[in-house]
Length: 164
Image (cartoon, rainbow, N blue to C red; front, side):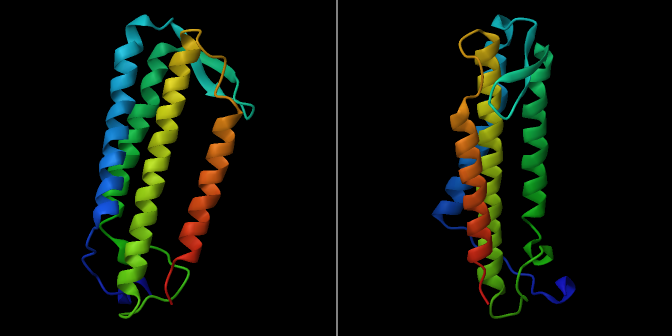
């Protein structure tokens, strides 16, 4: 079981460092962009977008800070979870021979997932600002298409790459 799995130090390569730095930069933008536009926003901005991408709920502009705070919490959570890949749930039995490859694959998947989540939140923040300023009416269908494509891509990546 998970307690029997080897505890290994997984080395990061250039792609891993890039994904981490990209996630950190995206996290910082989730705070910087709202701060830059906050004063010029009306008191009421979109707080939710429907499946069609149109704003369907509005609230105080203070609600703009919810996604950056959630983004920070997710970033911190992923940081700590990435320290224990031997405790993850894997689709195959983990042993001495396949542990390193599976841990590295799982950690890369986590980095991709984190970057995707933060980028999606940043896009929603940006579009909430744009709708609030009257420059747009909603997220648009492209967001749903990109969101679904990315989710299925991540699922494919995570399920097909684990080593026996």
